[in-house]
Image (cartoon, helix red, strand yellow):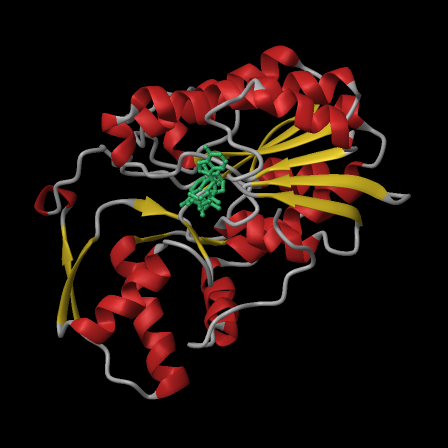
Length: 306
Ligand SMILES: NC(=O)c1ccc[n+]([C@@H]2O[C@H](COP(=O)([O-])OP(=O)(O)OC[C@H]3O[C@@H](n4cnc5c(N)ncnc54)[C@H](OP(=O)(O)O)[C@@H]3O)[C@@H](O)[C@H]2O)c1
């Protein structure tokens, strides 16, 4: 971003949205909207909002992210994850703005033994994954300038996520059973936001070669059990608090409405070679996030949500 930009953040109160506000705070004129002002379940209403603001960059961190609930609300999930991105893409294309959008490792069925690449065949196992894939396709059909970042296992200091759930359960229980047969890469919301800013800057004016789908996750891989083990080890290190006993279990012992892929580790090679960007390994990002976590909460953000 060579000159001051007009930047619109949607889903501004979510995990990634909150970190985008921090990361883009000094990148230009930032307007950050939550659901109250920009409701993606009413996609047509987004048009006038965008036309009023005339953003150079739209960062869409809003999504229907309740993976299990989506199984019983497929239409709402499709409106928010599939239809709204099409409207955003159309509005972006008509004013030559850049649309940055996030998608998910759950577009894959988990059957591959090595990390998934962008060009691999998608085959979502659940409603959430299907609606996110619909959003990707809609943006690609519209064309224009866009970046779709597929990420995975997002956590951070805000919202609902595995890290905060483990911290709470660790205080409440002596023993936790955690799924140990799904492989992925925990990715911090801060790392996603910082990588997004770097990508937007590095792409510069060269959008014809840069528009596309990119995987964007922290390095390495683990299971939910491995993630939990690392969380409690780090917590013990930081606070000398006692950890609960954690027991690895197969997914079959933890039934949930939505099926999850067995292997959803994504290859980040394309992000590295097109943008020279590599997110930190998941353990490093976790330590950084936990160091910054204060019980009384709150990280500084660069703009207010309207
Ligand atoms: N979380 C993950 O593990 C994960 C994994 C892979 C990919 N992703 C993708 O990464 C992106 C960011 O996710 P995240 O982790 O930051 O999710 P998040 O914390 O759940 O945030 C999603 C945001 O979207 C907002 N939202 C939901 N429905 C909306 C609506 N109808 N209109 C406007 N806003 C609405 C939510 O608002 P409320 O707070 O009011 O509900 C929330 O602020 C999403 O595209 C997601 O699909 C996430």
